[in-house]
Structure formats: structure tokens, C-alpha cells
Image 1 (cartoon, one colour):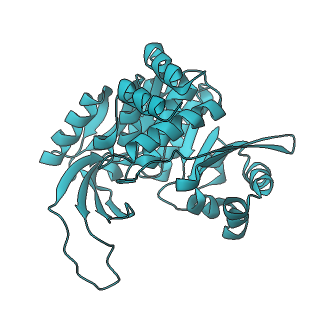
Image 2: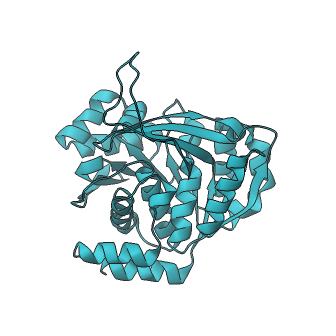
Length: 328
């Protein structure tokens, strides 16, 4: 089925998605080039844009037509209202977004003329999302068709959400970002792992990650994930090189490479989140992981042609036209 048709069908299906995690205000400055250590350079006027990995994923799912619920927290400062308004505009149910006595989470983002960026996050209210918070909204996880998780909240909250989903038979999609060590207890609950090459290296080691990402030795990567961590399905995103979908069963690894779309990149901020939000939506609608990844390649490419994270995300009609323009 053409991508354009499937995108339209997704919007009609209204699959149920739940995302548990972070909500940030992105403090964004553009520069001609990224600074060296100890160097001061001039940048553009500061922009405050809606972000946070989990909020971005939820916003993508909402704009694609999913019935999406977000569990998280913001403060009581002006940034909080900006983020609530942006999520509502993206058709996200924010009834489980709590207001806490902390500053709203922030991300400091610098983007250069080559569309490369670096990002530093300050957890703020996201640090108040704990296992108790998650359990108080268990019903939202249990009725979802898919659950999205990342690491911009504490490990205990992530594990609690994954366990609730697992016990309810809800597929868990996990992005190991920001990179930190995670327990095997958590990985055992993951149905689909989404990582870039750096995040992959944090799980299986840099040597094997490089062998896969740079030399195409994906069988070894798939077996390492399955044999050592119990992960039978993974998507490795490779930026301009596309992505690789790895499915392992009884020691046999199936590898599907999905090329990146040829586009003029403006800003890659939030593209990975757009990718994951699309995967969540497609899996919740019953698509297989390869179809989900193909759709995600289109949606994330569209996001790269705009500025910011959520501000670059389009509604289904706009993305479908983008896909049609690329012969998809």
C-alpha cells in the first residue's frame, strides 16, 4: 500500500497510544557553527519552543490521528502553559499531565547552519514523575494499543510504566535516550527498541555497534540484542543513512534496510521523536514493525524540513502530500 494511503487510513483508525515521560520548553538558538570548548560566539535571538522527547512523540502521534494520552508533569511557570497549549493543539489528551512545585523542564538547544545540534536538558518537573505518579495513571497505559518510553524521567517510573503495560499485554516501545545504563529488568519488558548508533553502543558495546552501523554486520547486532538482552525486535536509526529493522527469531536475524528520503535538511531537532511517535501510532493501529518504520522515515524526514521539534510536525494531509511529492 502506498505511504500516502496508509497515512490517511491511520488518521481514520484513531489508534490508542500512551506516552509516559518528559515535557520540556526548548530554549533554542541558531549559530553559524557550533562553538569549541571555552569559546563564546554570537547566535540568533532566543526562541522558546515546545519540546521534551515524550511530548514530541505524543504530539506526532496526535497529529497523525492517534487518540494519544500523555503522562507527565510541568511546573506552574509561563513555560508550562506554552507546553500545555502546544500539546492540546496537537490533539494530545493532557489530563494526566500534573502540575508540580518545580520549574518546568527545559532543554538548551544550539543548532548550526549544517542543521547539527547539541542539547542539554534540565529535568525540572520531569524529575517529579516517579513510580507512584505512573501507577496513579495505570488505566491510561492499560487501555493503550502501544506505550512509548524514554529516559527523560527516572528509571523507577520507566520500569513501573513498562511493567504495567507488559502485564496488560500492551506493547512497549523504548528509546534509550538520554544514554545511561538501564537494568536488564527493564529491557526484558521491551517489545521494540529504538536506538541510534550511539545508544546502540551503550547496550552492546561500541565495537559491535560500529560493525553493524558502519560495516553492515547487522546479524551480529541482532543476535547480541536477542541473546544478551532478550530484545528480539529493534530499529536502529542512522540519520542520513536511513534505518535498519532487526527481527530475531530462533537465532535467525531478519534485516530490513530503509533508506532516508533525499531532502534539504533545515533542523534535525525532534526528528528522532517524530520517528518514534510514528512507530507508536502504526504499531497501535496493527501495522508490523517494518511498515511502521517505513512510515516513520517519511514523517521524520518531513520534520527535518522545518524548524524546532513540535513546530516542525505536520498534520496527516501535509505529510501525505510530502510523501506523494517523493513518489511514495
